[in-house]
Length: 88
Image (cartoon, rainbow, N blue to C red; front, side, top):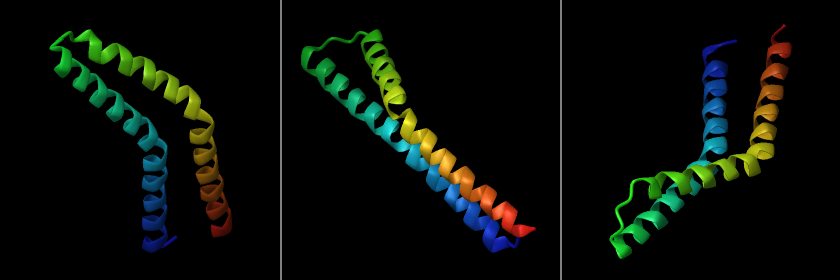
């Protein structure tokens, strides 16, 4: 394995990490924005109002998106193992 292949594997690993984490992060961002707008409009400054809905929505998103995440990781793992086998 040379430097180019190592950099390519690192780039693919970063891409898989972004592909897996981005949906959950975007959902969290949208929920946080909606809650902030609600708090601003109602002038309700309760700290638990921001954490509990985010926690619930992120938990549901993780459960709903887990097949996609596992498929992406398994696909990356298979490609990585195929590369390791081809080195020998």
